Length: 412
Image (tube, rainbow, N blue to C red):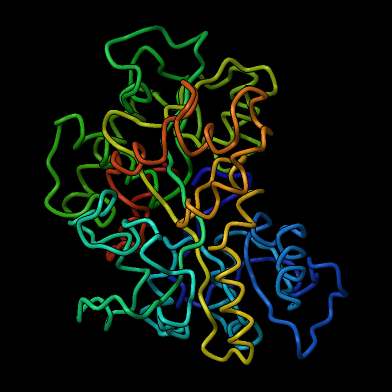
């Protein structure tokens, strides 16, 4: 995921494994301008610092008169806290859908009827509503597989949510234009594995997302044809991915594995790394700090997409406030803050009137034209990025094997 999130994946075991990761007090701050203590009129959310931004929570209170308290944590920590019982204290979890599989399987959520969400209409992007729409991946069933409950999927009714999407984006790679020389295909993931850049390439330290990116490259470049979904590899297919990674490591292709937004920015600015698996926001930040970096929005082999949303506690006593909060996100207000950071809404039609006359990124191009419409050479349109989706980040069936192989790879 592209982000300023300090995003780290939880690799020590499944959510049901009972592994306790460190973190702050579960609800130490309100984020909406009130005190940190809970009140009967307040709902409570656990999310990233991005979604618990005080401006977003204050906007919800101003619009509805209701309060959503927000506690920020890392991606891995919030999933673990939820599985260990935080759902009894909270009303909402706002996670990366990649980590929702175990929550879904253990039924640690309250299903939400689609009819309860007024702004979930036919104007929502088809990729979140329709089998076979651009961006839908047949082999994995994503992104629909985690949006809707199993019953809704089996009936083909799609009338009940597991989790409601509120923002999404795409991951790819970046490079330094002053260091990486023109070649045959400058938009291919192959640049990361090009022997010319041995010792100057870097991968993201993640047991799920990096194998997905490698599989996307291998299949997209015609080197291997995987049997199933790129985001849900079999043990045999994982063996192929890690054989390739081990070969790259043996020839010292990788300078290091990065795991933090700020670290990646520093690596590019210092030119310690020339080409890397990357988040677009980190590449933009590196540019702002003086690096001549380019983010490849639409790689030749395809994007890896991801989405975040609102998952409701099975024990919430503030259901109406939670539904209003979902509608607030779909209504577009938070995306006045999210769009200039490179993130998309499932309801672009409601975001457009809010940012088509703002110019926070480029004084000559509106935020809508820059981030959504593809009006510049710097950023392709949302439509083109959706159509170039190779796979979605997801929790794989063989998670234990992913984790074991990644641990061996990083430790050797």
